[in-house]
Every structure is written in structure tokens, then in C-alpha cells.
Image: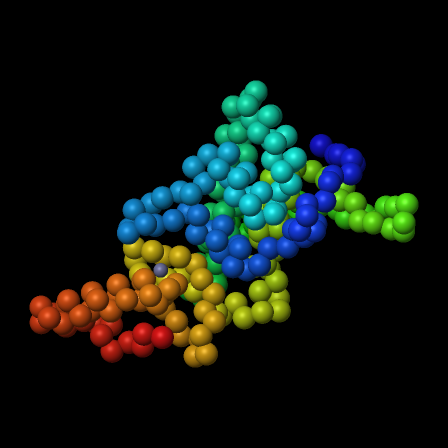
Length: 219
Ligand SMILES: [Zn+2]
């Protein structure tokens, strides 16, 4: 579907740029809360809310998708399936980077397909000069997924992919970016997961059980 209509600019400007943290937030919507799987994108509606909140889909585009999904449940299921599939594939790529191994071919195919769906930006005349028009070529969900995949590619081409980590807490497993000086952080958050690990080691020591990670660095 192609629309060429001018869309009203949001007050904050027309930026769709996602940071790497934004990408990781997307991956971490497939969450473990105290070891139990929780999907913070349980349905298409929640996914669209998340996308609008993060500025990767226009409110108008989301409303259009909601309207289409309302009349055709298969559309909603297909869109949600696509969102979760790209999220899972991006997670596999992040895991592979963190674990220094090759990702599965299927995950790369999915991510590469997602990267190809892209919004085209064109200059259009304005009464007082030139302005930027977004020609929304293609599907807004594809477009949002491409934008969410971008920062990972950017990090691989010109960043520090070796700082991409998976939280060591087995009941968390969040993807995070290690900004520590020594680049040896093991937990997404020292105050929660790091302290849990320390408390667990402390309990193990009190019981007299040797803890394999007792001497590991905490930072
Ligand atoms: Zn964690």
C-alpha cells in the first residue's frame, strides 16, 4: 500500500530514530519476570501502543492498522506474528553477538528481510521553501521493525558490539549494553540482578556450599 498524503508532524518533530537501548527495550518486551515468561506485547494492540510510544509508527498508521485488524482477525494475527518473529530473530542475533557464535540462518534471513522494508523520505515544495515528506511506502509494521533493527546494524558496523551482553541472572536474561569502564558487567542492573546474585552467593556461603562464582567480579 502506498500513501502520499502529508501527515501532520508531531510536536516533537519527525524523528523515527531508535537508539540501541530502544532496540533492546523491544527485545526485552519478551521478558522473564523472576524466571517466568511474560510477553509485554501480548496482542497487536499492545504492540501498536508500544510502537507509537517509541515513535516508530505514526498514530495515524497505528489507527489504520487497528481498523483493518478489527474487521479481519487474520490480519491482526499475521501482524503480531511478524512482530514477534522479527523480535525473536533480533534476539537470536543479539544472543549470538554476546555469545560470540554464529546466529541461526533463519534468524538472519528474518532480520535481513525486516531491514529491507524502509520508509522513503522525499523533499517536497513548501510555500516558504522546502520540507520533508515521508512517503509511507509499504506497511507501517514493516517500517517500524526495520527501524528497530537499525541500531543493531549500526552497532555492528561502527560501534562496540562486544559490549552487547545478556544478563547473567537466569531469571532475567535481559539484553543490555555494557557501558562500564572495564566492559565486564554481568548484570543488566547491579541494583536488582547484581544484588540478587550477590545475595544468592551469600546464602550459599552461609550454608557452607562452595559457590562457583564467589570470586567473580561484580562490576
Ligand atoms: Zn538482569
